Image 1 (spheres, rainbow, N blue to C red):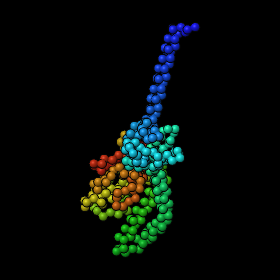
Image 2 (cartoon, helix red, strand yellow; image 1 turned 135 degrees about the vertical axis):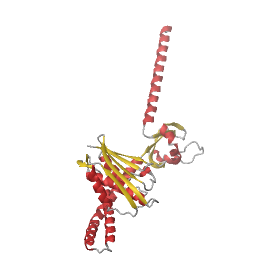
Image 3 (cartoon, rainbow, N blue to C red; image 1 turned 90 degrees about the vertical axis):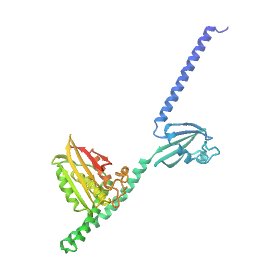
Length: 340
Protein backbone atom coordinates (compact mmCIF):
# COMPACT_ATOMS: atom_id res chain seq x y z
CA UNK A 1 0.00 0.00 0.00
CA UNK A 2 1.40 3.34 -1.06
CA UNK A 3 1.63 6.22 1.38
CA UNK A 4 -0.92 8.96 1.03
CA UNK A 5 0.70 11.91 -0.83
CA UNK A 6 -0.85 14.29 1.69
CA UNK A 7 0.77 12.39 4.55
CA UNK A 8 4.15 12.54 2.83
CA UNK A 9 3.70 16.27 2.29
CA UNK A 10 2.86 16.79 5.96
CA UNK A 11 5.89 14.77 7.01
CA UNK A 12 8.13 16.80 4.72
CA UNK A 13 6.72 20.06 6.06
CA UNK A 14 7.24 18.85 9.63
CA UNK A 15 10.80 17.79 8.79
CA UNK A 16 11.52 21.20 7.24
CA UNK A 17 10.01 22.93 10.28
CA UNK A 18 12.13 20.84 12.66
CA UNK A 19 15.22 21.52 10.53
CA UNK A 20 14.62 25.28 10.70
CA UNK A 21 14.06 25.04 14.44
CA UNK A 22 17.30 23.10 14.94
CA UNK A 23 19.12 25.57 12.71
CA UNK A 24 17.81 28.44 14.85
CA UNK A 25 18.82 26.60 18.03
CA UNK A 26 22.32 26.11 16.64
CA UNK A 27 22.57 29.80 15.66
CA UNK A 28 21.31 30.86 19.11
CA UNK A 29 23.80 28.53 20.80
CA UNK A 30 26.61 29.88 18.62
CA UNK A 31 25.60 33.48 19.44
CA UNK A 32 25.51 32.64 23.16
CA UNK A 33 28.88 30.93 22.91
CA UNK A 34 30.42 33.94 21.16
CA UNK A 35 28.85 36.32 23.70
CA UNK A 36 30.27 34.30 26.58
CA UNK A 37 33.72 34.29 24.98
CA UNK A 38 33.53 38.07 24.47
CA UNK A 39 32.61 38.71 28.11
CA UNK A 40 35.52 36.67 29.48
CA UNK A 41 38.24 38.78 31.16
CA UNK A 42 40.86 36.97 29.07
CA UNK A 43 42.00 37.05 25.49
CA UNK A 44 41.00 33.76 23.83
CA UNK A 45 42.44 32.18 20.69
CA UNK A 46 41.44 28.86 19.14
CA UNK A 47 43.73 27.39 16.48
CA UNK A 48 43.65 24.18 14.51
CA UNK A 49 46.46 21.76 15.28
CA UNK A 50 48.28 22.77 12.09
CA UNK A 51 48.34 26.39 13.26
CA UNK A 52 45.54 27.67 11.05
CA UNK A 53 43.17 30.17 12.66
CA UNK A 54 39.77 29.02 13.99
CA UNK A 55 38.44 31.68 16.43
CA UNK A 56 39.46 34.61 18.65
CA UNK A 57 37.64 37.23 20.72
CA UNK A 58 38.06 41.02 20.65
CA UNK A 59 40.69 41.08 23.41
CA UNK A 60 42.69 38.51 21.46
CA UNK A 61 42.71 40.77 18.41
CA UNK A 62 44.18 43.59 20.53
CA UNK A 63 46.78 41.25 22.06
CA UNK A 64 47.73 39.37 18.90
CA UNK A 65 51.47 40.23 19.36
CA UNK A 66 51.45 37.82 22.33
CA UNK A 67 50.92 34.92 19.92
CA UNK A 68 53.97 36.06 17.97
CA UNK A 69 56.04 35.93 21.18
CA UNK A 70 55.07 32.40 22.16
CA UNK A 71 55.20 30.61 18.80
CA UNK A 72 58.29 29.32 17.02
CA UNK A 73 58.99 30.50 13.46
CA UNK A 74 56.89 28.72 10.86
CA UNK A 75 57.31 28.38 7.11
CA UNK A 76 54.36 30.71 6.68
CA UNK A 77 54.76 34.06 8.40
CA UNK A 78 50.99 34.24 8.93
CA UNK A 79 50.58 30.74 10.41
CA UNK A 80 51.79 30.18 14.00
CA UNK A 81 53.72 27.01 14.75
CA UNK A 82 52.77 25.46 18.12
CA UNK A 83 55.16 22.51 17.96
CA UNK A 84 57.33 23.78 20.81
CA UNK A 85 54.29 24.30 23.03
CA UNK A 86 52.57 20.95 22.70
CA UNK A 87 55.19 18.47 23.93
CA UNK A 88 53.49 15.38 25.39
CA UNK A 89 50.14 17.13 24.87
CA UNK A 90 50.38 18.62 28.37
CA UNK A 91 48.88 22.04 29.23
CA UNK A 92 51.58 24.68 29.57
CA UNK A 93 51.80 28.13 31.18
CA UNK A 94 54.15 31.05 30.75
CA UNK A 95 54.27 34.73 31.65
CA UNK A 96 54.58 37.31 28.89
CA UNK A 97 55.23 41.06 29.15
CA UNK A 98 53.39 43.17 26.60
CA UNK A 99 52.61 46.88 26.58
CA UNK A 100 53.87 47.37 30.11
CA UNK A 101 51.52 44.65 31.43
CA UNK A 102 52.14 41.06 32.54
CA UNK A 103 49.99 38.25 31.11
CA UNK A 104 49.64 34.62 32.16
CA UNK A 105 49.38 32.63 28.92
CA UNK A 106 47.82 29.17 29.21
CA UNK A 107 47.92 26.69 26.32
CA UNK A 108 45.69 23.61 26.17
CA UNK A 109 45.31 21.02 23.42
CA UNK A 110 41.86 19.51 22.88
CA UNK A 111 41.18 16.98 20.14
CA UNK A 112 42.38 18.64 16.94
CA UNK A 113 42.45 22.21 18.26
CA UNK A 114 44.61 24.43 20.45
CA UNK A 115 43.04 26.76 23.07
CA UNK A 116 45.21 29.69 24.18
CA UNK A 117 44.18 32.24 26.82
CA UNK A 118 46.00 35.33 28.09
CA UNK A 119 45.02 36.75 31.50
CA UNK A 120 46.26 40.13 32.73
CA UNK A 121 47.96 39.43 36.08
CA UNK A 122 49.73 42.79 36.43
CA UNK A 123 47.74 43.77 39.53
CA UNK A 124 48.26 40.40 41.23
CA UNK A 125 52.00 40.55 40.50
CA UNK A 126 52.20 44.09 41.83
CA UNK A 127 50.30 43.17 45.01
CA UNK A 128 52.55 40.17 45.60
CA UNK A 129 55.64 42.33 45.08
CA UNK A 130 54.33 45.02 47.45
CA UNK A 131 53.45 42.42 50.08
CA UNK A 132 56.96 41.01 49.89
CA UNK A 133 58.57 44.46 49.99
CA UNK A 134 56.29 45.46 52.86
CA UNK A 135 57.29 42.43 54.92
CA UNK A 136 60.99 43.03 54.34
CA UNK A 137 60.65 46.76 55.07
CA UNK A 138 58.66 46.11 58.25
CA UNK A 139 61.33 43.68 59.47
CA UNK A 140 64.08 46.23 58.79
CA UNK A 141 62.06 48.98 60.47
CA UNK A 142 61.68 46.85 63.61
CA UNK A 143 65.43 46.16 63.65
CA UNK A 144 66.32 49.85 63.23
CA UNK A 145 63.76 51.21 65.68
CA UNK A 146 65.63 50.46 68.93
CA UNK A 147 69.03 51.87 67.85
CA UNK A 148 67.32 55.01 66.53
CA UNK A 149 65.51 55.42 69.85
CA UNK A 150 68.85 55.25 71.66
CA UNK A 151 70.38 57.79 69.26
CA UNK A 152 67.45 60.15 69.83
CA UNK A 153 67.90 59.91 73.60
CA UNK A 154 71.66 60.54 73.34
CA UNK A 155 71.07 63.54 71.05
CA UNK A 156 68.74 65.06 73.66
CA UNK A 157 71.39 64.55 76.36
CA UNK A 158 74.09 66.10 74.16
CA UNK A 159 71.89 69.10 73.38
CA UNK A 160 71.63 70.01 77.06
CA UNK A 161 75.42 70.22 77.44
CA UNK A 162 76.35 71.41 73.93
CA UNK A 163 78.31 74.60 73.33
CA UNK A 164 77.13 77.34 70.93
CA UNK A 165 79.38 75.92 68.21
CA UNK A 166 78.00 72.40 68.70
CA UNK A 167 74.30 73.34 68.74
CA UNK A 168 73.86 73.48 64.90
CA UNK A 169 75.46 70.02 64.61
CA UNK A 170 73.18 68.56 67.30
CA UNK A 171 70.19 70.26 65.64
CA UNK A 172 70.96 68.62 62.26
CA UNK A 173 71.50 65.28 64.00
CA UNK A 174 68.06 65.50 65.61
CA UNK A 175 66.46 66.41 62.27
CA UNK A 176 68.08 63.38 60.64
CA UNK A 177 66.87 61.14 63.46
CA UNK A 178 63.37 62.62 63.09
CA UNK A 179 63.43 61.77 59.37
CA UNK A 180 64.47 58.16 60.01
CA UNK A 181 61.78 57.83 62.70
CA UNK A 182 59.19 59.09 60.19
CA UNK A 183 60.30 56.49 57.64
CA UNK A 184 60.13 53.72 60.25
CA UNK A 185 56.65 54.79 61.36
CA UNK A 186 55.41 55.07 57.76
CA UNK A 187 56.80 51.64 56.88
CA UNK A 188 55.20 49.92 59.86
CA UNK A 189 51.86 51.66 59.28
CA UNK A 190 51.87 50.79 55.58
CA UNK A 191 52.73 47.14 56.20
CA UNK A 192 50.01 46.50 58.79
CA UNK A 193 47.24 48.54 57.13
CA UNK A 194 45.32 51.63 58.21
CA UNK A 195 42.24 51.82 60.44
CA UNK A 196 40.89 55.26 61.36
CA UNK A 197 39.80 55.96 64.95
CA UNK A 198 37.72 59.10 64.46
CA UNK A 199 37.24 61.62 67.25
CA UNK A 200 35.86 65.19 67.23
CA UNK A 201 38.62 67.75 66.69
CA UNK A 202 39.12 71.28 65.41
CA UNK A 203 41.02 71.72 62.15
CA UNK A 204 43.04 74.56 63.64
CA UNK A 205 44.77 72.02 65.92
CA UNK A 206 46.38 70.57 62.79
CA UNK A 207 47.77 73.97 61.80
CA UNK A 208 49.57 74.41 65.13
CA UNK A 209 51.18 70.96 64.98
CA UNK A 210 52.18 71.23 61.31
CA UNK A 211 53.88 74.55 62.05
CA UNK A 212 55.87 72.84 64.82
CA UNK A 213 56.88 69.94 62.53
CA UNK A 214 58.58 72.35 60.12
CA UNK A 215 61.28 73.01 62.73
CA UNK A 216 62.14 69.29 62.72
CA UNK A 217 62.60 69.05 58.94
CA UNK A 218 65.87 69.89 57.25
CA UNK A 219 65.86 72.31 54.28
CA UNK A 220 68.16 75.07 53.03
CA UNK A 221 66.02 77.48 51.00
CA UNK A 222 63.89 80.38 52.17
CA UNK A 223 60.30 79.06 52.16
CA UNK A 224 57.17 81.04 52.98
CA UNK A 225 54.59 78.84 54.74
CA UNK A 226 51.00 80.04 54.39
CA UNK A 227 48.71 77.98 56.65
CA UNK A 228 44.99 78.73 56.93
CA UNK A 229 42.94 76.14 58.85
CA UNK A 230 39.41 77.02 59.97
CA UNK A 231 38.33 76.67 63.60
CA UNK A 232 35.72 74.09 62.59
CA UNK A 233 35.08 70.67 64.13
CA UNK A 234 35.12 67.33 62.28
CA UNK A 235 35.43 63.67 63.27
CA UNK A 236 38.90 62.58 62.16
CA UNK A 237 41.77 60.43 63.35
CA UNK A 238 44.05 63.29 64.33
CA UNK A 239 47.26 61.24 64.45
CA UNK A 240 46.67 59.74 61.01
CA UNK A 241 45.59 63.02 59.41
CA UNK A 242 48.72 64.69 60.78
CA UNK A 243 50.86 61.97 59.20
CA UNK A 244 49.08 62.41 55.86
CA UNK A 245 49.39 66.22 55.86
CA UNK A 246 52.99 65.97 57.07
CA UNK A 247 53.82 63.87 54.04
CA UNK A 248 52.23 66.38 51.67
CA UNK A 249 54.01 69.25 53.47
CA UNK A 250 57.45 67.62 53.40
CA UNK A 251 56.90 66.54 49.79
CA UNK A 252 56.25 70.20 48.93
CA UNK A 253 59.42 71.27 50.78
CA UNK A 254 61.46 68.69 48.83
CA UNK A 255 59.96 69.94 45.55
CA UNK A 256 61.10 73.49 46.34
CA UNK A 257 64.54 72.25 47.43
CA UNK A 258 64.94 70.45 44.07
CA UNK A 259 63.69 73.41 41.99
CA UNK A 260 65.93 76.06 40.42
CA UNK A 261 64.23 78.86 42.35
CA UNK A 262 66.20 80.32 45.29
CA UNK A 263 63.04 80.44 47.43
CA UNK A 264 59.51 79.10 47.47
CA UNK A 265 56.02 79.20 48.91
CA UNK A 266 53.76 76.50 50.33
CA UNK A 267 50.04 76.99 50.95
CA UNK A 268 47.95 74.66 53.10
CA UNK A 269 44.28 75.23 53.83
CA UNK A 270 41.69 73.28 55.78
CA UNK A 271 37.95 73.98 55.89
CA UNK A 272 34.52 72.35 56.07
CA UNK A 273 31.66 72.95 53.63
CA UNK A 274 28.60 70.87 52.71
CA UNK A 275 29.43 68.29 55.41
CA UNK A 276 32.79 67.64 53.77
CA UNK A 277 36.30 68.40 55.00
CA UNK A 278 38.67 69.78 52.37
CA UNK A 279 42.43 70.19 52.65
CA UNK A 280 44.34 72.00 49.91
CA UNK A 281 48.12 71.77 49.47
CA UNK A 282 49.96 73.84 46.88
CA UNK A 283 53.63 74.67 46.25
CA UNK A 284 55.68 76.42 43.57
CA UNK A 285 58.49 73.87 43.54
CA UNK A 286 59.71 71.44 40.90
CA UNK A 287 56.94 70.11 38.60
CA UNK A 288 55.90 66.46 38.85
CA UNK A 289 58.16 64.12 36.87
CA UNK A 290 55.38 61.57 36.46
CA UNK A 291 51.98 62.25 38.10
CA UNK A 292 50.93 58.64 37.44
CA UNK A 293 53.35 57.26 40.04
CA UNK A 294 52.76 59.81 42.81
CA UNK A 295 50.84 57.34 44.97
CA UNK A 296 52.77 54.19 43.96
CA UNK A 297 54.43 52.58 47.02
CA UNK A 298 58.23 52.29 47.00
CA UNK A 299 58.45 54.37 43.80
CA UNK A 300 60.00 57.85 43.89
CA UNK A 301 61.77 60.28 41.59
CA UNK A 302 62.90 62.52 44.47
CA UNK A 303 66.52 62.84 45.53
CA UNK A 304 65.52 61.73 49.03
CA UNK A 305 62.67 59.61 50.28
CA UNK A 306 61.56 56.00 50.03
CA UNK A 307 58.39 56.40 47.98
CA UNK A 308 56.04 55.63 50.87
CA UNK A 309 54.93 59.10 52.00
CA UNK A 310 52.12 59.87 49.55
CA UNK A 311 51.18 56.18 49.23
CA UNK A 312 50.60 56.10 52.99
CA UNK A 313 48.71 59.42 52.83
CA UNK A 314 46.47 57.92 50.17
CA UNK A 315 45.75 54.94 52.44
CA UNK A 316 44.93 57.27 55.33
CA UNK A 317 42.52 59.32 53.20
CA UNK A 318 40.80 56.13 52.00
CA UNK A 319 40.53 54.94 55.62
CA UNK A 320 38.50 58.13 56.21
CA UNK A 321 36.35 57.27 53.14
CA UNK A 322 37.89 60.24 51.35
CA UNK A 323 39.54 60.93 48.02
CA UNK A 324 42.47 62.91 46.62
CA UNK A 325 42.22 65.07 43.52
CA UNK A 326 45.18 66.65 41.74
CA UNK A 327 45.36 69.70 39.50
CA UNK A 328 48.61 69.03 37.64
CA UNK A 329 48.86 72.48 36.04
CA UNK A 330 48.68 74.37 39.35
CA UNK A 331 50.40 71.64 41.43
CA UNK A 332 47.44 71.67 43.79
CA UNK A 333 46.25 68.69 45.82
CA UNK A 334 42.67 68.61 47.10
CA UNK A 335 41.81 66.12 49.85
CA UNK A 336 38.12 65.50 50.53
CA UNK A 337 36.61 63.41 53.32
CA UNK A 338 33.30 63.24 55.21
CA UNK A 339 32.88 65.58 58.16
CA UNK A 340 31.64 62.73 60.39
